[in-house]
Length: 340
Image 1 (cartoon, one colour):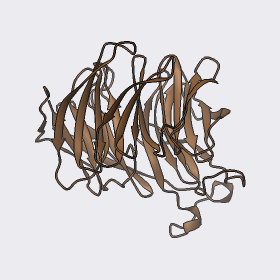
Image 2: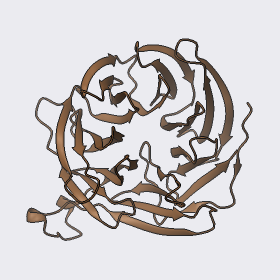
Image 3: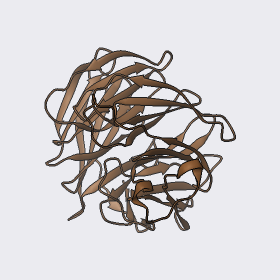
């Protein structure tokens, strides 16, 4: 194991503690045009966020409340449970045309400017038809595709594809992709493929040029998939029973399998160097290194880092060219920064 982490003295604090949800950490990394980074976690009906300066010395807290509008978009009473929407997943999406904050909730999908100050679009989630298996109503799985498309999964196994304009609020549902029979758990994409997973462990692969399904990976056991990541032509899937599986995305063959955690994997992330970070209810952060390609893949275990008595619900690389990571902890308002 060649990576050793130390906890940064400059941790990130948000207003609310993180709920126990998969992939419960969002990050908008700093860039040449934006020197600060943004971090956030979902908590019940809200998204708690912090804007952090490049040197980490300055932090500005904020929060976005997720409220389902009443009839004619009129405000409703705060204690009216009929209009309460819980955040299931939140993500910053950095499209070439625009950056967004997306909240995938029960009952609705809500799209904001990255700082959460302006609500750009609300899409109400349809009720479950009688022939579907999922009883709850929710959206989950968020990724950007191509120049201006936003893809979000839902409880019906559909992928909603939204057209995003460079400016303004003219966001609209362009098309709906149907293929899954169970609720979507995660989405991930690159320049060629959109990949979706569901609660049964099924993986579907879509061509982003035509938005048509081109392949699928059948469930290998009874465990659902909680998180997806991609590196080159490799697809990495994290499972509820603690396994990591790696697939060749082009021929849909499994090319690697890791008994990664003793409990449910809640999130994975991958950087451009082939490092995979995984976190779990077992309180461990584990780092794996991929090298070679899908035809000659080599996997090495690089790091174990234990955060005692803290189930971990989210992980993101701070920079896609480095090993530093941010980790979110269930029932804590601290986002832990680990420096390699």
